[in-house]
Amino acid sequence: MVMNVTHWTDKTLDRVMEIWLSGNKQAHPFVDPSYWERHWEEVREAVPQSKILAWTEEDDIVAFLGYSGEWIAGLFVDKERRGQGIGHELMEEAKREHSRLRLAVYVENRRAVSFYRREGFSMVEERKDNSTGQLEWEMEWRAK
Image (tube, rainbow, N blue to C red; front, side, top):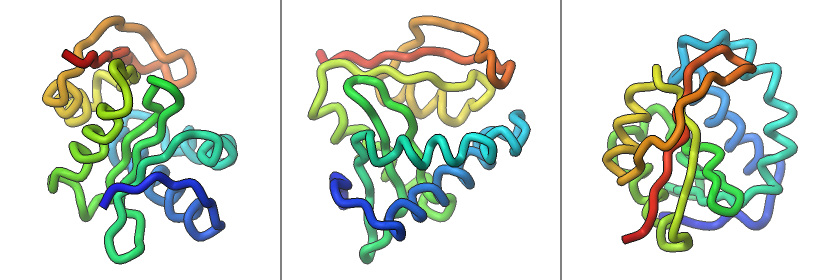
């Protein structure tokens, strides 16, 4: 079930951060894992300031999409729940609220690039992420 996270407890924030950290390490083996660990505190502080759509099962968050305005900061699904349409459902909810969405994705994260293309996103700019040295695409979706 999709829900907006509006009340943050330490338990809720800890779970979101657990999914964020493990998801980044799994999806980005081409980035040194210490990069994510170094940014953990910064992200933990930013998460409650963002709009978070979460997918819950039995009162446990198993996936979330974080965004601010039309910019999607990240979409993360617990490893055990991937490939079950949860990311699609979260994306559909974000699309219902916006006529345009944007995001950045590492080109080497082929699974994510493929997912976003299936969701109707197209590449609008290619650039180097100076903090990781990785090539990334800015992608955009517009309502029809």
